[in-house]
Amino acid sequence: MILDSWGRYPRTIATVLEPLDGPALRRLLQAHASEGKIIPRGAGRSYGDSALAELVMSSRFLDGFLSLDSENGIIHCGAGVSLDSVLRVVIPKQLFVPVLPGSKFVTVGGAIAADVHGKNHHIAGSFCDHIVGFNLLLSSGEAVYCSETENTELFHASCGGMGLTGIILDAKLKLQSVPGVFINRRSIVSENLASTFEILEDNNTNTYSVAWLDCLAQGESLGRSLIFLGNHASNPNFETRTRRGINVPVTTPSFLLNKYSMGLFNSSYFNLKKLLHKSDTVNYDSYFFPLDNIGNWNRLYGRDGFLQYQFVVPSETALESITEVLKKVSAAGKGSFLSVLKKFGKANKNWLSFPLEGYTLTLDFKREKSLFPLLDKLDEIVLKHSGRLYLAKDARMTESTFKQSYPNWEKFLELKKSIDPENIFGSLQSDRVGLTVENDRKENKGRKKA
Ligand SMILES: Cc1cc2nc3c(=O)[nH]c(=O)nc-3n(C[C@H](O)[C@H](O)[C@H](O)COP(=O)(O)OP(=O)(O)OC[C@H]3O[C@@H](n4cnc5c(N)ncnc54)[C@H](O)[C@@H]3O)c2cc1C
Picture 1 (tube, rainbow, N blue to C red):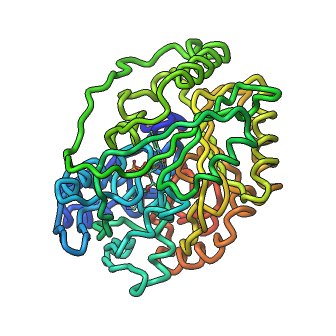
Picture 2: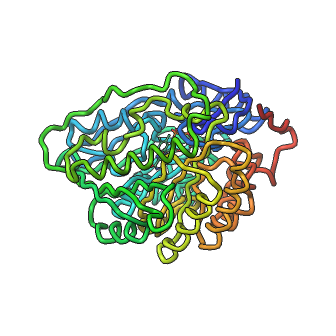
C-alpha cells in the first residue's frame, strides 16, 4: 500500500504488517526479516519518513494496560497505547503524564522512540526522563528489559532511537501528581524576538511556556509573538475531556494556503488575541492539544503535503541564529502557518535525543520545489550555531547534517551493529542519514518510492 506520515511527504510503497498478538509479532518478524527493512510504527504522527520502510510493523495491537500503581504513580502499559488513553486512565486518580507533546494521539512507543518533549522541557526534561523501563523485542526475537540500571546502553540508545534498535513492547511510566488538570493560563504579547526571549527567560519558573511566533512579521516586529504560560490550577474536578472539534474532510487545494492567506491568519490571530483577556483557566485538552481539535488539519496543505522544520540552537546564540532563520524565510517569500518557539532545559543522556539546552523553533511549510534549497540554507545556519534538527519531524536532512549535529551517532551505530548486524530494523530516514546503509543486507531489494 502507499503509505505516508503526518506531513504526507514522502510517500512510499510499504507492506504493513499488523500482528494481533505477541506470538504473531515474532512470527511476522521472522518470516519477513529477509524481505527488506522493517520499522515499528505507532500512530504515524511523526511528520517525515522515520516510520516508513519497505515493511512497517504496526504496534497498535499492543494496546493493553498491565497495571497502575496509584500510590507510587507508575503505569505499565502496551507500547501501542495512546497518550490520550493513558490520560483517561490516570486523571481520575489525580495523576498526570509529566511530558506531553502537541498531539495526544501519539503512542507510548512513539513517544519513547522520539523521546518527545512538551512545553515544560525547561522544568521536566523529555518523555524518557520519566520512563522506568521497557521491554524491547530485538531482531533476534529475544525480548530484553531496558532501564537506567538494566541494559543501560540499550536503554539510552532506544530512548530517542527512532525504532532502530527494536520494537518496544510495553513500558512503565512514572506519573506526576498534580493539584488539578485545569491550567491557569496567562498570555503575554511580545513585540519582537528579543522581547520574546526576555519574557520566556523571566518566566522560566512557570511549569509550561510556549511562544506562537508571527513569522511573517518583519523589520522591528520580527519575531513578535504571543506567549502562553501555564501552571496547574488547584481544582477538584479531575475529569477527562473530549472536545468535539471540526474536521478537514477532504484535501484542500494547496493554493488556499499561500503567503497572503497565512499573513492574514497570522496578523488577525495576533490582533485578536491581543484584545482578548490575558489570564484564564482552561482544561488540559485545550492547553496542550489545540491542534488535535481540528481533525486531519494536515490535509490543509494539499496533496503535496508539507514539511515541518524543527531545530534547536544553544541559548547563547539563539537570538542571533533565530533572527537569521526568520530573515531568510521572509526573504524567500515563504510563510509558515504555525511557528512555535519553546525553551529547552539541559540535554539528557540518550544518544539520539533531540533536545539540548537552548531554544527550539518549529516552522511548517507547504511542500514545493523551491522549498528545498531554502531548507538547505537554514541547515547551514543551524549547523553554524551548533544546533540540530528533530528526527521526528524530518523528511530531508542529509547524512552530513545529521552526523555533524548528533555527536553520538558512531556510538549508536556500533551498538546497532552488535544487536542487529543484518539491519533488519531500518527506515527510509535511517538509510538517508547513514545509520543503516553501510551494513546493508545483500538481499535488500531497494526502496520503492511512490
Ligand atoms: C500535531 C502534532 C504535534 C506534535 N507536537 C510535538 C511536540 O510538541 N513535541 C514532540 O516531541 N513531538 C511532537 N510531535 C511529534 C510526535 O510526538 C512524534 O513524532 C511521535 O514519535 C509520534 O508518535 P507515533 O506513535 O505517532 O509514532 P510514529 O509516527 O508511528 O513513529 C515515530 C517513530 O517512533 C518509532 N516507534 C513507534 N512505535 C514504536 C515501538 N513500539 N517501538 C519502537 N519504535 C517505535 C517509529 O519507528 C518511528 O521512528 C507532534 C506531532 C503532531 C502530529
